Structure formats: C-alpha cells, structure tokens
Length: 375
Image 1 (tube, helix red, strand yellow):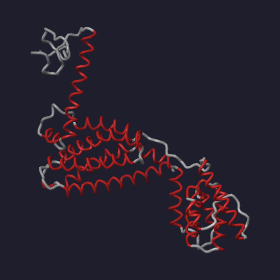
Image 2 (cartoon, one colour; image 1 turned 60 degrees about the vertical axis):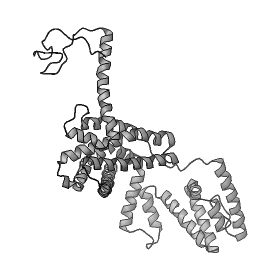
Image 3 (cartoon, one colour; image 1 turned 30 degrees about the horizontal axis):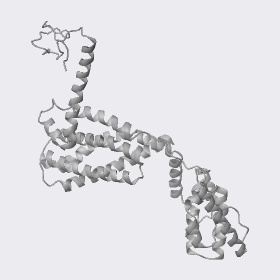
C-alpha cells in the first residue's frame, strides 16, 4: 500500500535539512507532498496503522510461543521488530485490568431474603412436625421457628440456610425451644446443631459493634470475651460493614500492586540465577515480558470465566487448571532458554513460592491500609 507521493524538492519541510532520498536523515520525517487526494489520505492512514499493528503482532507471537526468546533478542540489540517492553506492558496491562478487574458490587445478605416455594413447603412440613413433638413432650406451645421431632429429623430436613432466612426474633424463639427440647432429651447431635445455630444468631445480633457490646453485657462474666477478642470482633464487624467499599478499593488498586511487585519478582529471579552474573535490568526486562504474556492470556480467559461460564462452574475450574499448567510450562521454558540452564524446576518453584508469599503479604498490607482509610 502506497504511503503517498514523494516531493521532488530535497529540503525537509519539518527541520529544513537536506533530504537525499525519501526520508530526512536529521528528523526522520518522510518527504511527502502536502496535498493528497481523499483516498490517498485514507490509504496513508491505514498503512500507518497496520505498520504499528504488524509490529505489535511481531512481538506478540514469539512472546507467547517462544518463552524467553524475545528478551534475548531485545538484549542482543534486535529491537526494530519489537515494541518496547514497557510500552507493550502498559498497553496490555490497561486492557487486562479493564477486562479482568472491573469492579462489581458485593452482594450483601438481606435479612428478608425471599423464600422459594420449595423452601416454604419444606419449612411448613418441618414446623408441623415440631408442633407435634412439643405437644407430645408437654413443652411450651410451639411458635414459628426451626424445630424437629427428633435430632435426626433436624439434621436431615433443616440446614443453616433455612435458619439464616428466619427473622432475628424467630431465630431467638427457635433456639430457646431447641434448648428446652435438648434439656428434656439430652443429645450430642442436637447440642451441635444448637451450637451452629447460636453462632448464626450471634452474628446476626452482632451486626454492629454496639449490638455486640450490648449482648456481651447480658452474658455471665465468665462467658464474656476478653479485650483481645473484643478488638478482633470490632475489626471483623467494621470490615463486614464496609466489605463492599473495601473490596472495590482493593480491586481498584490491583494494577498498582502488580506493577510494584514486578521489581520484587525480578529480584527473586536474580537471587536464584545470581551465578549468571547479569545486570538487574536484564532480569527486570525478562520479568516484564513474562508478566505481559500472562496478561495477554488472561485477557482471553478471564471473560470466559467471569461472564460466560461463571466463576464457580466446572468449566471455569478447568480453565483455571489450564492457565496454571501454561504458567508452569511458560516459566520453565523461559528460564531455561534465557538463562541457558537445564535444571530450573527447583529454582522455578522457589520463585513461585516467594512471589506468592509476597503477593499475600502486600494484599494484607493493602487491606489494612484500606480498612483504616474507610473506617
């Protein structure tokens, strides 16, 4: 595709230098005619675009199929065919985080969660059996709640989700009646059920720190939490109240986390391959190329997991396993080719462990910083 008609004059219109052929040796501007037809303008623009596009794919293909080779070529001076590592990383990472880490609102459990017809019928049948047992046992008249005619019936017909769906008042009444039933007929299984339901009920009651303190006052001094437990509970309640804001802020700062972790990952690689005696910058360029390849693969796989198959589906689990296998394959071959080593499995495992621990540590630090900011 033609880039346009070249001028006969030999003066550069940009810097005024002498032009020998088609390009200025001083500034690099092509010596083209200023006036061109409409189709000439369009064709020139398309040619310019596909020139960049071809350079992008000339970098993309070997980056994905020949691990470590692009870095070797770049450091050997073969750079004209490839895009600058940092420029490509920035472009790819922006696309990746737009696709993979679009903030989504965390669903907060509603106290008045709608009950399906099947759940309603199941609860009605269970409550009928509860009323019958209570009448036969001579206990107080039953009220709407979670009851059973036997401990086995409780385990079979009721679960924690059913109990969670009850109102706070009905949970309290149900627990009181279960405790009376357990007192009359001692059962280890029923005691465990009461313990689980009590935890759910306490969590509902402790929706705020003030409610938690109020509940603590109703307990015997021996049963009350100590100061450390109260501090932990206060933090947990605060995080729960701000869970949506904290999660969205954390996801928003993921790009910064990954970007800041790259120099550290390069340092881990340098420590493991220190006998190669190469500069830290070379390790960093190798790391940038590796992270770019990971982002490119994730750009295509994340939407499948997030929007098509669902994050909890079997297909998404298979994709996740495939990504992990690809990471191991890519890292093994990249380390082997770039560092000219045959035995790299042990070093690769050590690098992964160090990076994973650092990732979790930085995430913990970020969560604490976000927690203190939003609370």
